[in-house]
Length: 308
Image (cartoon, rainbow, N blue to C red):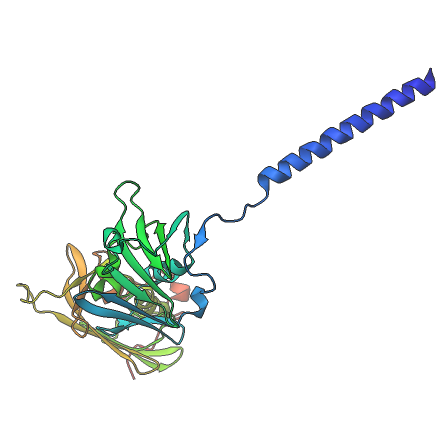
């Protein structure tokens, strides 16, 4: 009898083990990552390998981008840093996957907006994509790559045909910019060393962290939109100049057009206006008030009372 009981327990344990293994296999099959579906538009071409991009846009001027010192820039029809987010979308296009594709041979490409194409994007080394119209039923974009016609999600929307200023970076200054001199309306800050500054006019009880914060505000400032500079100057107060010199000698000039209902900074060199929230006017155009201090540390961290 004892042997029969042990045998039953062994069979029961074996059955439970089988159930556990089957459950584990099921969970593994459900949770394991699946290989991405669809066909890549340009196999073998990766964003990290791209150095130059040209958009040919019918009657509009060609739009050209180049990677310079790790930063994407617009090089034609104007010269400016490119918007990082928009460039990421443009660089990701060759590796986009399509669920539907057809052999282009024998097709009437004009029906898909590809003869001539809406836009041709040249990534260099004969890697070219042609963008066509949208499919009216599924709102997918027709794309011609090599001898294949693809349908893809339209991540770029109307950007390929847009004015070059749409592609300008929203950041006022380059990444990791280090400001050497800052000339604001009614305030001038000039570096004496990496940690010492002269401020004119010199406010009472000025602290070094006030200067540091003002410079940091400029290096991090980003507009929420960019518009073309109006041909006719707007009425009202004359524009106030801002000049920023970086430690590499590069000079950036802006004009303060307005501070209400939004802060508008103009760059005549590019012919564009940067639009920022009105609250940014104080952060960019003046020193922050010094923090409250006790009589025991009133001089702590302060700059010299007179500018050298």
